[in-house]
Structures are given as structure tokens and as C-alpha cells.
Image 1 (cartoon, helix red, strand yellow):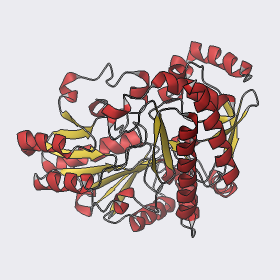
Image 2 (cartoon, one colour):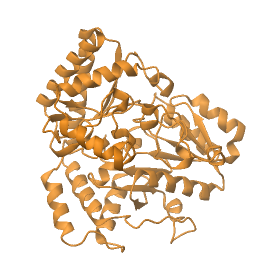
Image 3 (cartoon, one colour):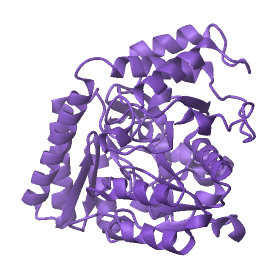
Image 4 (tube, rainbow, N blue to C red):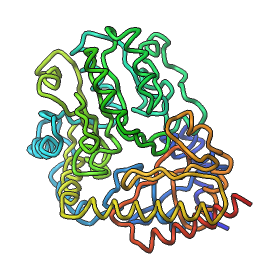
Length: 430
């Protein structure tokens, strides 16, 4: 039995002071029948909660911890930078260095604007697209999450799917009416919108590999055809690579998938675990941003020197030889082990993977879009999650999230995780 006395006390105190006792809904564990565990520290592939419990962690701060937690090279660089100042409200050489590194790594990224979050990246990219096209409407995909701005909290994934609130109170109908919802992996659902109202659609925004309804890779040909249709109608394509950027390769996942989006959103890894976001794209589009152009965007902490220094150090380490081969091998090992565990347990489920991103869907044999994902057995997933927590394995408390494998995860970590998965599945099936 897991000792969670201190976490329970902190949850009770937090509930009086913080809505739901968490500062982001994805941290709640209500959907899996638990109160959240309060984390005290993390190192490498491990996190430790307030009660001293140790877990092999596959949340990784929802993606940024690709090197593992508290990498000494990154923390040393941050300490060095913090001694010089935490924030200036003025440009720094570090910002230029990070922008150069991103632009060199991503084909088609002539310029980049640094921000403070992925949500800001989505807002900015859409604003650029509307200014460039003179159109108002956008298309997004059911189950894809692009932050919590009003226009994008329509059939969103991530926490919305977990908590059963795909739409949000407080979103004006007039804003929601500008967003069209298509089905991921269905080019027909996109074609219908362009056939009916193509001249008013500014952009299509898409996760090239969906990771907020659980991991869902695109079908062959889906993304190239999507780009072809959008460009044929004069609309832009925005790739949300807040999760996939620098996760699957040194650069953008869209390059692996042989597509050329007009704008790319980044975040998570490029900040090394510190708050950050970015939009990158062609020169003529990026120069629409103030002060070069008429599209206003600003942020007090945009390009924060601590975030930028952490991101620079992280990207330099990721650029070392064989880094992504190691991540791919670890992901393949996890996938094979999960599939074997499903077979041995007799439980119904499926495993979707893209590199070091993995999701096991419980109670369903195939997931290609959000409609499929919603058919997963969330009650059985909750039991599965509790079985993993009891065995020292920490994954996101939601069926609709990815497991994030890091360079700090060893073969022993993965094998121990697979054993725990098998045992938890056995209990769930029984």
C-alpha cells in the first residue's frame, strides 16, 4: 500500500487555496480515482514524492525532460546564467543564439519569435495566418490540443478529454464559430470544409503526430494531402510541434513526414524544462509580427534568459551523435514489451508509438483518431494506472496522454516497467 499521507495533507491544504489543488488540470488524478501525488524532487529517470516514494517517471513534465530530470549540465548552465540576472526586459545574445540554432535545424524556418508558452505560440501563429490571408476561420482536429486560448478550446484533447469537458465555459460562441472541427486521419473531413467555405479559411492547425488524445500517428499520405488541399485554397498550414519538435529528430517531425508547413509551433524541449514557446516560419510571414509588421504580440518574459540558456544547453546535448537512435531503441523496446504484456495478460488493448512517445490504450484494439480514442475503457485504465503507481511506475493520470521516454531511462528501467505493466494488466483483466 502506497504511503501518501503528506500528499494527502498537501492536497487538503491546496484545495483551500488553489482550484482543485492543482495549477493545471492534467495534474489532477480524479479521473483515476486518486488524489494527486505531490512531487518533491526528481533526478534522471526518477521522481520522488513528499512521502519519499520513488517512481520511474514517464511524464517528464509532459515532454521537456528528454534528457531526464535535473541533468547536471543543464542545471549548471542555468545556475551560471541566473548569477547574471533572471530577466531584463531587453534583448540578449542568448536569444539570437537560440533562434539561430532553431532556424538551422528546421527547414523553412527563416525566423523565429520566442514566447513563454505553447498556448501563446498557437495564438500568435493563428494571428499571423489571419493577417496574411485576410480570412477569419480555422480548421483544427478533434482531439488535438493547442493550448487553452478561446478559439482552440473546441473539441480539444489532453485534459479536456480526460475530464469529460471537450469545450470550455467562458468561450464566446462568436469565437468558437470561427473554428471548424475535422477528424484526424480523415482527409475527406477536411475536403468538405474547403469545398464549402475554402475562401474564408485562414489556416489548418494540426499536430503532425497527435499526442494529446494519446499518441496517434498520421496515416500515410494524410499530411501531404492536407497541405496540398490547404495551399490549393490559399490557406496556411500550422504544425503544432510543441510536443514533437526536437523529440523525434533534431528539428521538426514534419521533416520526417515530408511536409512543409507555413508556420511551426515549438515549446517544451527548446526550454529544457523551463517555460517557453516559439513560432517559426517563412520570412514574409514572420515579418508580419510587430515591430517589423502590423501583427501585435508581446510578452514580458518572452526569451527569458534562464529558459533560453536551459534550452540551448539541452539542444546542444541532443545534437550529440546517436542521441535519437538511443531514444528510438528505447521506444521500440517499450512498445515490444507492452505488446507482449497485452498478449500474456489476455487484456484487450493496443499500443501506439512514435519514437520515444508511447500510449497503451486499454479496452480497444485500434486508435486512429479521437473517436476511436474515446472508445477506450477509462475505468479499466484507472485500475491499470493504480496498479502501476503501486509498483513504482508514474505515468500521466489519463488514458489520453503520451508516455515520454527520456535518455535517462535505462534498459533496466524499461524492463521493470514492462513487468509492472504485465502485472497491472493481469489485475485489470481479472
